[in-house]
Image 1: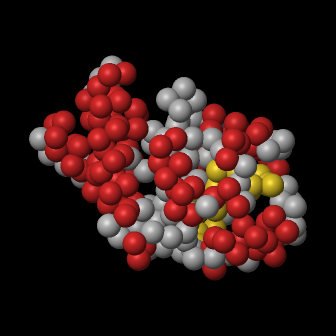
Image 2: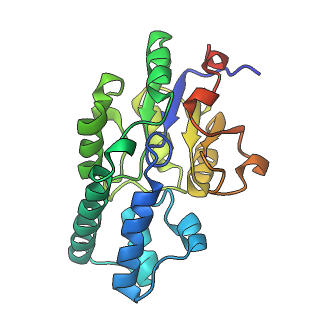
Length: 226
C-alpha cells in the first residue's frame, strides 16, 4: 500500500490530543444546565464529536442561539474544559507518535495543517502546551471562527488544503469522528485515517470511506507516505 500525497491535514481534539473525556464532561454539565439532563452516549457520538460549539448549542436548544448567549455559554464551557485539561497533567500531551510523525513529514517536505472545531482561545492554549508552531504555520490553521461552516460540511478541509497550496485530492486526513469523515469525503480528500485508541467512537473498521483505523501514531507506517 503506497499513498500518492503531498499533504496531511489533522483534526486536533481526539486525534492529536486525547481529550474526549474532558469535552464530554464539560458538555454533559452544560446539557444538564440547559435542558436538565446530560448528553447520552449516542448523542455525544452524533452531535458532539467534531461539531462546532454553535452547532452543539443549537442542538441542545433546538433553536438558533443569539450571539450574546452563545458567547456566554462558550466562554464558560471552554474555561471549564481547559481547567479539566490542566487538572490532568499526566495526559496533557500529544498522542504517542505524533511528534515523530511531524518531524518525519517536515523532513520529507510533506505539507501539514490542522482543521479543528476548536475555537481560537483553545487553539492558543494548545499552542502554549504543545508548542504547535514548531511544525505548523499558526496563521494557516483552520479553526471554528463562527464564520466557516463546521464539519460535516467540507469547508474546513477545503480551506486547510487551500492554505497549504494543495488540492484536497493531494491530501490525507487523520480524523476521529463521523462528522469529520463526512467532511473529508465531501471535500474530496484522498484517504481518511481514523485515530481511535479504544475502538469505542464508532464502527470505523467497517466504514466504507475509512482507509484504516489506528490507536495512535506509533501504529501508522509513515514510510507509506514517501
